Length: 345
Image: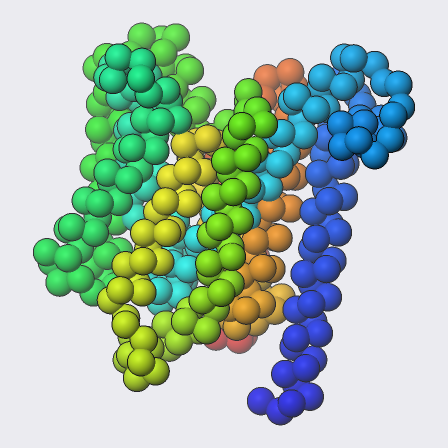
């Protein structure tokens, strides 16, 4: 690649990141205005400015509570989840060299579901863990079993994928069994809504957790962009460059599992974000991970903010589970990307 082409690619990536950052801020502000109660964009600006100490403008207490205590936190959690899951998808697709890899391939989502229903329905733990805590523990337990099974069966990329598929099916069956055998109708409704993904009731503590987790994952992956580039070409290439292939793969997969587990424990199962958004980002800026990581994060954040807004208004006043909305939007988007990339692969 010539110097001119390299500079051009960097310019496109920088422009995309700047545009994505602006689009994210605007999306959050506009999305906050949507819902059962109308709030104007001007009022959103005033309320946010008041709480940030920038201005002092009188606003209605009801609107202040709607914006600051409900819609802004859930929009920020949605953005953090979208960014984190998209970057996790980038990592796994590079490490496993599989375009269908996503964060839930490692059994993390199904393990989280099992952990949540064990706490919520069986009451294991005596109340020490809530649904989120049970989901986090279940996710890590499932991930550990995937790594153990993959290691015992050979440790190759294919074995990791097969182990992930097997554990996903196992924990999905366990979740269904617990619900079928032990839950009453009220418990089933409550747990199933969480399992399908929900941002109802998230608060600023959830914002701080998800933002910190997503930011940590993005920073680490961006710093290791050259490593992910090498893994894209195979383990042999990475090893020839002096990289400890096994240690790096284990470390990045553990990071992916931790980030996914933390995000899923707050928002429930959210599919297709980690699968679709990395492909969309590659279509925009190419395969180099120094550009792919930040662009994927921004696309994931913007996508999830608007999906969350859609779930609030689609069947108002009853919210649509966010995992259902991501699948309804993600599947057609993925099919479109497949057809757009048909002539380039």
